[in-house]
Image (cartoon, rainbow, N blue to C red; front, side, top):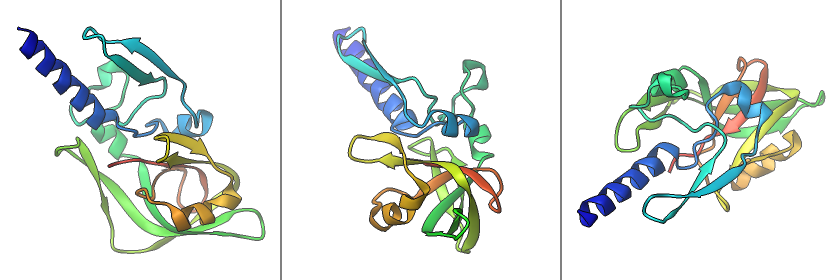
Length: 179
């Protein structure tokens, strides 16, 4: 019986890791409102510490909207862009180039991104909230607009951002993590 409990706990931890392994907030409005997330620690039945973030995470393909978190299909309805360059404009805005991205639900990691071959130009409004995903400590971090271009030059992540607003007037960007 202990072996099956241990296997079940391991499976639950792996499933939790796939569905919430650093994906950042799914609510477009919460991206700008809470770029950081407070973490709490509790102990699982097995005695293993479990860290949970207070921000919502990217849903799994099997999650239901009755639990309060969106389904994968609801998350996929957002706009995503894999950003190649960010150039400051004289008015304090940013001009971005990148590939549109879509969320494909299902598969071993519950979802993945598919990138279009075409390159688009997008405009970030002055003062827009931008959050990157810091791979060093696996957490979201706010970044100044003026620093986004330099960050992208050394970014080792996916460069895939959840976009708030239309591509012609972006009011928020939040980098998504997907291993």
